[in-house]
Length: 250
Image (tube, rainbow, N blue to C red):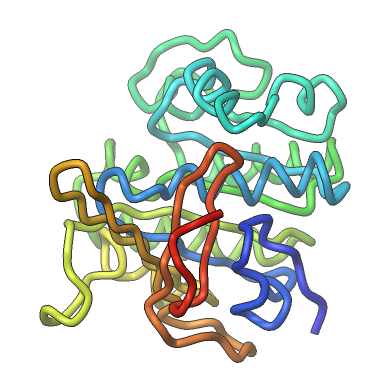
C-alpha cells in the first residue's frame, strides 16, 4: 500500500509509515484540541517539504487570520501559495454571503456542496494537488436545515474526492469528552466517522497552569495502528505525538 507521510512528528510510526494514499481521514475533537493545527501541518509540510501540493478549504476562519496564526510555527503559507504549491480556499465568506478578495473562493450566494466539490477539484487539477483539507465539516451545516441533508453532503464530498488522486483530511467538532468515561462521539453529525477511512480523536485537559493533550487513533482501514492513548504536544514547530512511555519533552 502506498503511504502518505502525515507531516505530524511521531505519528507516522504509529500508522505503519503514514496515511494510506487516496483515502479520507477524519480528525475530531473539542474546542481548542488542535484540529486545525494538525490539518494545516499535514497540508503545509506536504507542500513545503514533501513536494505534494495541497488545497486547504476553510469554512470557519478568515484566510488572512490563518496565515498570521500559522507563522508562529514557521509555516509561511503565502510563500507556498506564491510558488503554486498551496491553495487556501475561502469558503467562510461564501457561508455568510460576504465577498472575498481571496484568489480561491466560492460564489457569494452561499455554500453549495456541488459547487464546493467542483471548485476544489478544479483547484486540485490546477496546482497538481495531492493533499486536501476541509476544515471543518461543522461549517457545512450553516445553511442546511436537516441533518439528513448534511449527511448526504458529507457522503458526496467524500465520494467525489476519492475519485481524484488526493489524500484528504476533514475535521469535525465534538463536545469535550474524556476517554473511558462512557460512549464517545467521533463527529458532529454522526456520519463522518463511517465515511472516513481513518479516525483520529484529539483531547485536551487543562487544569490551572497544567495541560494534558492526547491523541487516539480510533480506526485506520488497511493499516495496523497503535491502540494506546498517545501523549501529544503543540510546540513551536507544530504538533508532536509521543509514545505512551515517553516524557512530555520535544
